[in-house]
Length: 307
Ligand code: DHB
Image 1 (spheres, rainbow, N blue to C red):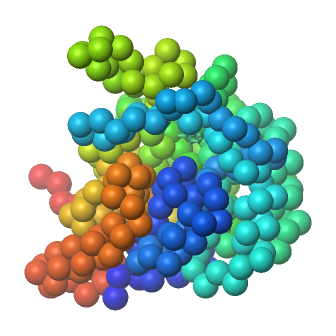
Image 2 (image 1 turned 90 degrees about the vertical axis):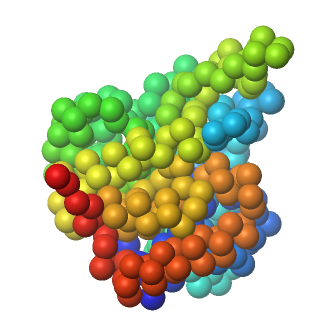
């Protein structure tokens, strides 16, 4: 079996779409649900629908992608309604990304009052809203937000975090997160504000913010492995981890789980290959496990060896 648990949810396969890929509309989310994905993540929602940043705002590159979407989404009610109107028999990762703390609290109050029972993910790491810093890089803001959230929120909550790059940052963030009844974290969001250059035209490749945008794909895989590993070594064992970043093959899934991920999410590779990627990942992961004599994910989860 390649099943995995987060909170009360059972994922029959340990991979789903990363927030923002194949998940803005009901038609896209249904394609994910009808694939071999273990569940579905919804596009990070704001209280009101948003059109997002001017285009072009996404580009595939040699080793991944760059994007500055700017939170185009149908609004929280659309996603809550999609979940309520469909009898979805897989876990749902409902992503919330308000553009202010007040909006996040209002959105989470709405989720708390709704009939939603699956996993809710508060995104503290969108790098692309013009003029708004990533909350995940402000430790005081993380702490104040979580204190306010857990005054009323009793459903399973996860946090989408930006990548960290310094061991002291992991210590400081984990110390804060361990004070709260979080169900999981999701690490990493895109590596924010990278720049891709087209030498031929001597120009940037996306329009918003002068070409700066979130980097995903193969470039970021070692950063994802490090963030999953570093948090697994520091977080309370009750807090599960969704590993996201640079997953393209079953081997990448295996490596993230070896570093401590419970399940993984696929962004750039899903955008490039489409939802049939999940059938390929399932086959590749199963083959690796068979070759190594593993029967379940817990046989190797978190068991990365050190010298
Ligand atoms: C967007 C990008 C992100 O990385 C994120 O976490 C949320 C939203 C976006 O540009 O739409």
